[in-house]
Length: 560
Ligand code: HEM
Image (cartoon, rainbow, N blue to C red; front, side, top):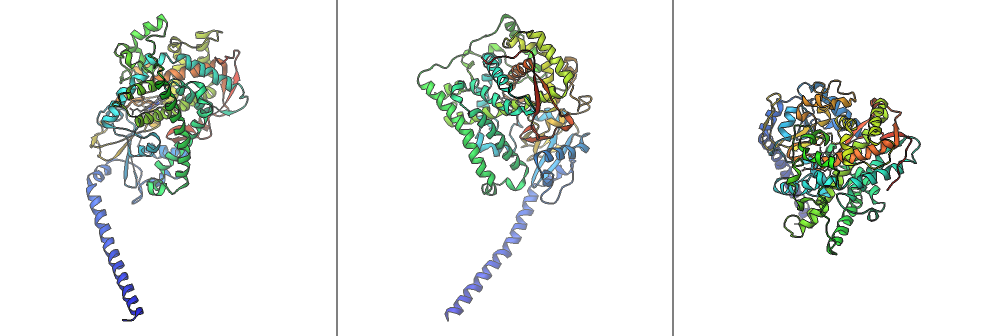
């Protein structure tokens, strides 16, 4: 056989093999798809009975998530409105079934459960950043780390942070003095909350921090943009595609900035530890007599003052007597002390937890405080009342706030709760459901394998729970109004076994920062609430920035 003839035989047999391959591939794919659909038949059958906007074949409702962050938020909220009566909305994003819940009875079923504690698949995008930290982990790892970490945010520990909360609040007031026109207060709140976390939970002094607090906060904001893109743009979900995009390169740079700060913090603390610098056990009561009296009755007052409906309890609500001396250590001190045995927590796990607390602990409070200041700017009459209360507590004095003062800031507290109601910094909480669940509100079933999304933003704006729900009304948190409300109708910090571990820390810190600002400035705003463009890049924010103006009040505090 000639060379050309041999070549043509080879070519035709290659062609035959290729054709055979495709001939087999097509039916194999069809068979696989049929099998896959069959294996999910139960899910489709139950999903069919849930209401939701119609979608397209294969992609489902993925097109609802096109456009910018603000458009997505507005669109999803609007698309859910026709289903408000039932408060259950089904959406398909490709093969993923999302079920949004915002009836307090259904919310209770999920959040109070010790079974539905697994986070949704979307949280995997956090892994390169937060590893398997408290926010993401599950099972035994989550349980043992939660048990270790929760006591480091107990009130007894928090009271020892009050001086640092005050000093940092006064420092931010000093920085704010240069703002004479419209500006975005969120940048200041971010930097301040990062610095406070470093000094308190991490126990790292100001001199070690340098400029990195601000850079860190900005990197976190950009990381959240990327994570939100991956959650909403179906094509960015697979690693294979994402890794070839410019976002992946950006993510690497941002994580470098973020992790370099957390690594430096751990290194510094470890050096101190090795050099024999004893981890300080925090004093038992760094408070006045009246505060001791308060402490004895904490269980009855803690609820609302610390961000949770009065009838709810979690592992942060333990009695002071139950928190032994060993547990009265600040967060990073306790982790390092525990790691000495190498059993409870490894070095890698410490890093994951530090990254988690640094993120959860600053971005949420930065958003919460920025929304609060925005509300003060918009509602001058309400701000008058807050200022009046602060003047009653502090008079003309420039003295720092005490723990007792924070308990007397009743009206400010109601404004803060109302802010967290209308603008919950964490607007959704998503869980992966492993078993079918029957919804108490309407008896319908959500199938195993679905992602259940607690829509806090929608839950907090239910007209049947909060009359005139879109109006900012701090009186919604008057004791008599709160008393008759379903406990799970207000969950800005989530609730149940996976509630926010920093709830009390956040409330105490926010009261001190915000009261210090309002003792020094009056806040103004050229925009109304209806002008706000909300976006939910993991954390709820104002797309146009948190624009406010400040007018100095008679006294100005000095940074200590
Ligand atoms: C206004 C401020 C805050 C709000 C609104 C808030 C809200 C929340 C919410 C809703 C969750 C549940 C998230 C989910 O299940 O997906 C959560 C979890 C968490 N938060 Fe916060 N948070 C705030 C401040 C803080 C602070 C200051 C810290 C730490 C210093 C913190 C640490 C955590 C941690 C570690 C978790 C995970 C807990 C677990 O899964 O066991 N948060 N937070």
